[in-house]
Image (cartoon, helix red, strand yellow):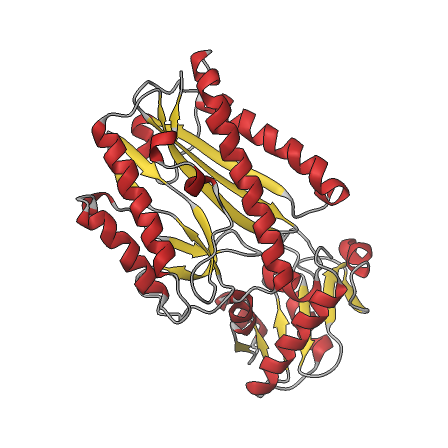
Length: 379
């Protein structure tokens, strides 16, 4: 239980209060992040369903396959029930519903095919997803730690990529070095918890014309002088995610590359300024991307400005067209300006942002500490 028993008891109480408001007897959680949020049982989702039933009143129940029984019993929930195996003579979700035996209940995740097979009248409900939007202090603390590790990984790129390239190293070598540095730091600082599920750092490094790919993968390619090099890093601590990312210039940046870097940075700052309590998600997206359009890069926008983060690296709500969710304090988002010029190059920056009264808090510090002019890798 990465955040402690009191945290998860508090989350169950919040779910129960929401169930009462909606006159629901309970909710069966099947979506792995929702199960973790309510129970603290950190697990890897598989074909074997794991469920957590939260009644409107009373104690929750955790449903697991038999092979997970001992692991699940270590969490704070006292009522843990197991089924033998999947798919089983009776589908595990049908067994869960039979065990619950309640009246009007909700369910958070159920495929159409399974719903038809079970002939259940459970109400689809995103109640827990919506509760997850606003982070609690314990969650914010882990997200801030994760942002610091993502920043450290970028510092490793800034400090070491030039030497690696000068020695004939590739994108893969740069990525291997920065991830290795960061993992070593996490192992020392997080200690015993590092070996538990929920602590990790991942990333990508890609350069040159392939930087025009928003989701590019590293290759055994030697970055060339004058090219952009994108490093995008995601870190998680206690199962909570944050991101940092930067575009570097290899050896030198001509006027056009520097102008693109500066415009992307202005877009980043516009998103931060627009992230205000009471604003809508889509208005933040528009305020940020309008900076790129005014700068002449409108034809090179390939995606929204950001997404929610927490137990999942990508979760709702979205800083995107069509999402009119109103921002509340302690919502957490990525901030990802991107300029992608096919066949030529690309620019991508990433910050993590937390909605606060009076203005956004940015726990990822690399970009504010290193403006575009200082992100030229010396060769």
